[in-house]
Amino acid sequence: MYITENDNARIGYLRDKTHRLTTSPGCYIMKNKSKEIIYIGKAKNLKNRVSSYFRAGQDHLPKVWKMVSNVYDYEFIVTDSEFEALVLECSLIKQYKPKYNILLKDDKGYSYIKVTDEQYPRLQAALQKEEDGAKYIGPYTSSFAVRQAVTEANRVFMLPTCSRRFPQDIRKQRPCLNFHIKLCMGVCTGKISCEDYNAIVSQAVDFIRSGSEDSVKRLTDEMNEAAENLEFERAAKLRDRINAINKAAESQKIVDEKIKDMDIVAVANNSEMACASVIMYRGGRLFDKSDFFLGEKLDGAQMREQFLIQYYSGRDKIVHDVLIDEEFENIDMVRQYLTQKAGHNVRLFSPQRGTLVRLAELAKSNATEFISNRIGRTKREVAALEELSKALGLEKPPRFIECYDISNLASTNMVAGMVVFENGRPCKKYYKRFSIKTVEEQNDYECMREVLRRRFENYFEKTDEGFSIMPDLILLDGGKGHVNAVAPLLREMGVNCPLFGLVKDSRHRTRAVATGEGEISLSKSRSAFNLATAIQDEVHRYAITYQAKKHRKNAYQLELTKVRGIGEKKAVKLLTTFKTKEALKAAGVEELARAAGVNADTAAQLKEIIDEM
Image 1 (spheres, rainbow, N blue to C red):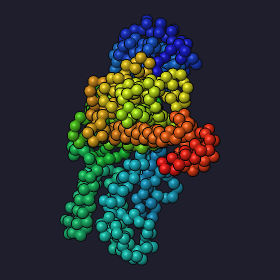
Image 2: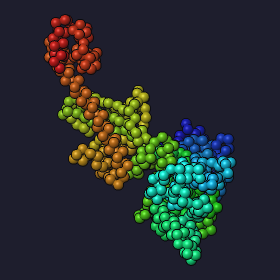
Image 3: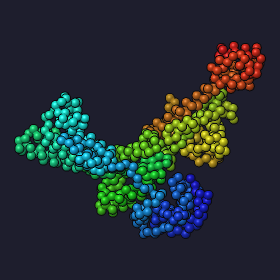
Image 4: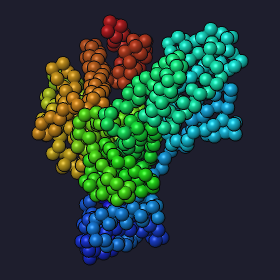
């Protein structure tokens, strides 16, 4: 989006002021007409950075455009280095919380692990504390992590999760399936004393609080002590519990055994908004997870930089290893900031291969799930749009995708279909059908040019609400020839929209995306590939259905003209009046005579032909 004097009457003043700006590093502070601070940024070169906001013809993301359109004036603070500017920017943002900076908003409340106040306590997940005498562990910022911890502890220590009450239901019924598959110790059998049960619950709480390593160490000491005291049955139970903890720890690690404490950070976005997810591993186990809504989408590198700075600036402790889903331009400077704040070396990096990539994918998946819930779309749909955006080199995931296909029988009944996908789903209210008007003989390139010309003439003339949206991506059912045929037309009409083709293989299945010069494979982007295939299948179905319908209509029309006195115009009038073949057959002689404007004899002959159709 471009900023003009119509959007901000002060743009001329701001451009003139920026011409005199220093090229030193520093921070800039944007203010609105009420002198409120609405944005704070840092720059290695203040003049170059601030100029980019007000430069004529500069294309901005919607959030940046909104900010610039509200700037009345700005101030700046010069620093000795870009790193000092980063530290100052962080401090100023925390102080003023400007409207257009990323402001971390965690949508989730706190969750707790509840140890019920009973003779035989249970471990449960709770969303809030209650005055019920129970013991609460927490708070945790992630209900996911709480549920995972409770499930794991109940499984490892074989605690009951059924609805039976103890001691009331002891020996009342036979043990359930969980007892037989060794997921429950079987309190209901009466073979576990209340004292032993509570000791096991204490071990489970200790396991949740301190992690598997410390729990194994303490239980090992207890096991050795029991063995020395010749309490071999107790020692055997402790041994089995240690083995269960180790097995659970292995299944939870997902990562290399050498990794103990790590934060994994990922950012996901759709065409309008973004969010970040932080997954925390402590002692090799998943410890907690937090999701943050970042508001409207910014440049990917800028979002990751701002999120890391703001997230860790409010933390007392910073782990030694921070894994980020993607590299960004100022990663070294952010690493320096984290190291300085933590008081120890912080390794900030993006994995390129191996098991750590799976951790980044896990965080990305959580961030995608979070944003999909926000916009009412599935995680798969959000991921598909983001994958497609990256594969095609788009600035942002496309919200509106239009796809076109030509369908014909030789040079007859030439038609085209236009389908629209909004946020990864078909939006049928915007579908359009075209009958080719200017192309006499079969020529897919010229047909496609005619259709795109008519589509955008309607957009500029605003004659049809269905054509009122400028798409974020245009796809053509065809290869680079189709792209090269249409691209000059779009430039000529002033349409600045990414354009690609969808290439099929010999079995008529989507194979790749075509550019004007070659092809882009989607084989490594499964979600994007599935979306492209769905779009291509849908536009082909829509176009060929229209072509078949038109062909049938023309066939009916040709049959009707066999009757003497029925020409092409009267045949069209009949089809228009009765609309369907069934309605035409149901019409009586008088109705046919009235609709076609013919006498009774002609109408009778017409009725005979129609009944035979």
